[in-house]
Image (cartoon, rainbow, N blue to C red):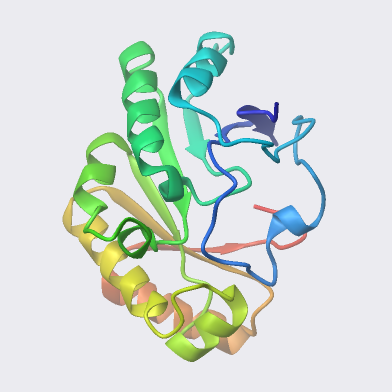
Length: 203
């Protein structure tokens, strides 16, 4: 069984699925079978909510202020388990801030608007912007929704901002400085906080 909860650079992370509609050129899971203190993050079989719940019950959350849904997959690919897990963690540890690191393609994945239900249980939504237009975005993310993904990601992010949650948009420093600045402007227009992530650090 793969690790469902792991620690990376002092942060606590939930790995609840390996499914993802993207195959990003810079994806951290291309580097190895695990990161942080996890032994393995690849599932032989996708975890059930009961298995996730058991992992939470067995984990020491002492001193944990924030927990992040990230792992080796897109968390919204397991939307039901994401919602149930967030609700369960909040019921046990209401003081823990929950964040989801997402590609922002949840609406396409789940074939319905999802920002409101995610924002109801998640405190911080961090969306991977990755590039500045649809063509470049498709090229770097190699997603299965070619031609539709970029606009869907922006719409999802705007709706999260409208919900009043803290929303981040991120790019990885594998793109040019010019593209990073263009990304910053897109982010500011939407009303989210802009973050440049380090490829080398994997965060």
